[in-house]
Image (cartoon, rainbow, N blue to C red; front, side):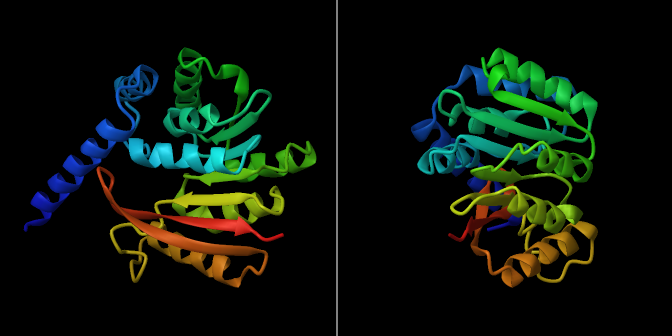
Length: 224
């Protein structure tokens, strides 16, 4: 099977899974369409991945969620929907344009009151969250610039509590995590080095294939 045929098969299976287990969702579909119309890159999580994030947040009863990398708010919607009454999500986004698109998507989804969008470099914003005592966060989802993944993980851990989950996207990168020399692959390896050396967490990683190609998540549980 050619790589093109394989990719098409992954896409078809992803579409089948989304149809059977998620179905039509006007708010999420609208968010993706609005992102495309605004010229944002199509790098959101897939629908099955978004629902996985949603289920993980619900499974631990998350009331405070931290997201590093909002883009147009697609994953933000999935996570914010998992929050109970009174729950709060803080999402960090570098680009003002992306943050504006995310805000519009969240408003249309009826979730604006649950989400606090902070604009600017995340490594500048995260210390402010600590100063504000915005945490502890029950779940952190990191999906931003990959060279800083280890730094984002360190901050997520600092803002977590025992029992929190820290999830990092795009850690396999078509297998380039093994020996790739670009900044994204180097950043992925730095993350795994940090996870392996950190006694305060128990971690694993899962490879994924689908409409987003061959990639994966790292998932760390903050030990009690």
